Length: 124
Length: 369
Image (cartoon, rainbow over all chains, first blue to last red; front, side):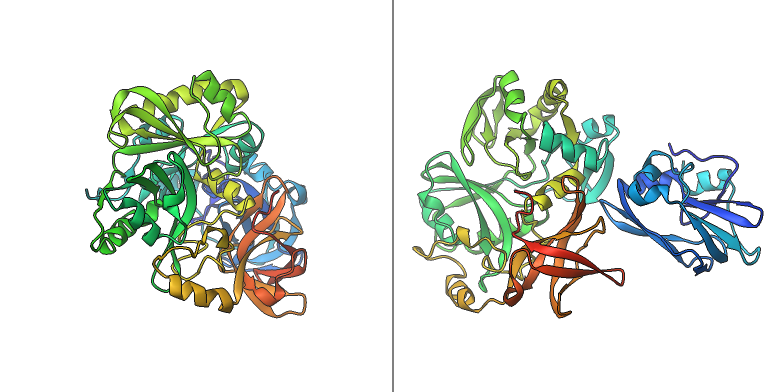
């Protein structure tokens, strides 16, 4: 069973995000990290990059495959999690503590699921 | 005998894997464990201690009869009949154009009986290929793939585990028989085969056993490997282990499109006998352009199947066929084919990964010594 915190928003492409002071903190879900297997590299965006909803935000390399992570919001990348440069596998260990990037919102257009809907969506 | 239909196929150990909470995947129609505790963790267990793998999806075909020795020589570019009894070798089936259909391990069980292990994805193809080429040879070809399980025990502590189970240890590419309390349809008696082979580059064996006893042996191995910090290992670690050691994967590193010269396994060729594809192979020997090599990248980017390889002068010189993170070297590694003209070990190359050119160097296929 995947861990699905109640206070977060979820997308169909298995990102989680939470908005505070017009900035979205974004990561991948426990379900996603488990599907990926051992994460070995994260191809991060640059600070200042503009991202659009459902556009590619970054790419995660696992031993098994390379998977794109999509932006759940419109806006500008304002921070990346530097803890992950040397130790991307931290995302496997706790995908909710180790967020990936923060995006400053340019609007409030986003769709999301709450934890109940996401749980249903992944069939758990 | 027909190979069972219906997807996914399951090995005899399917329930044992689920009990261990393995992450199961579809591998060429087989429901197989990808990982139990993590690919890298399992990989390191095999390099440092011992790992056990269910590889029962591999095929089992027996060729027997008065002409068995002549037939196997005709079917392979290697002189299989020259093996001593209870020895095996690594070779490949070639088609009429001398391209590799499937690589295999073939054993000489006695003068008139040979046993071979095709890859899971090519069992039907190989079985039919043998029948098609049987012609007037006096041989029987029997497919036991549904009846036989395979468990690989690999790693520096593999021999200790076998000792603890009172199983004798064969030399590399030899077989020793071990008595059990079940009939073995493959050997026709109560013996299982303990084969000095593997797909990890470590010491170890592959146990070739009747399905009836597979779960019992698997669970005994599970309890015996604990003492040595051993782990059950899935196909994920099996793939990363074989890539580090430059071992080909049928259907991925070649797919009826490469000859043994290109695949860097010309050591399997012996021209002292007639075999399928021989005339074309002699032509290919002087005319091949690409060769199989290993690549080590300078960071943890991973080259994947189909990624392009460039020279330091920015010429497109080849393509990756397999890639992974090397848990031992802690960087991306790949296997693939490059133009022979650029084939200088340690030369710098660049691999195109998501619009970036990632620097690396050429190695022999056996990336990890």
